[in-house]
Image 1 (tube, one colour):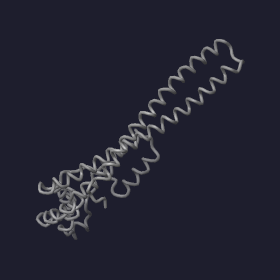
Image 2 (cartoon, rainbow, N blue to C red):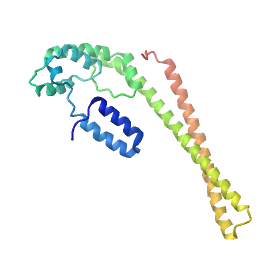
Image 3 (cartoon, helix red, strand yellow):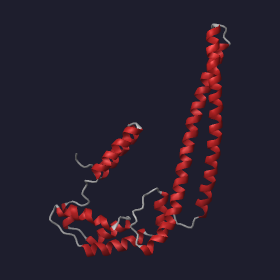
Image 4 (cartoon, rainbow, N blue to C red):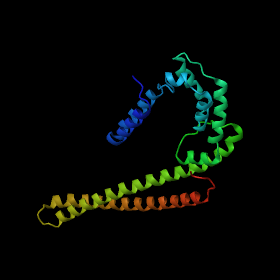
Length: 229
């Protein structure tokens, strides 16, 4: 299996997202993520011309743990290039100072990104304070979106059920059907009535819960002290 890296991987996942059914998309996306682990972090020319201080700075600023250097070491070993560990570590430490702020923690959490515990102890607390608030907003937003989608689905099902119910009612009063058929249609009509009532209750309850969560979201979003950009 050959590795699929960078833009090609992203583009293919977008295609899968828009063209393939959910279960198949998830399965293929997982397989593609496994192949992506085989992508080299640096090519031959990048290894030979590397400024390890800058590379460490960039990795730290992206929140990558110090262990990420192992991927660079592996990539460059293939080309006979040794990295400068001390220079990388100094750059990485400076990069973490950019990453491990409360404001950035908030942005990372709000975007739903995973935290790799890269921050040193003296910066971890402030990062996590922002991260937790952002994570709460992300979770609330995700739940609200899911509930809104559920309401749309239930309203669609309700409309379809009401339409079928009307068709059955029209047949029952048409006078062109037998007594047995009318009885069968009446049984169907009663089932539809039950389904309509259940859908209407579920819609109201879901909308109520979504409104409650939206209130929590709005309050938290308006009161947090973090910079969003």
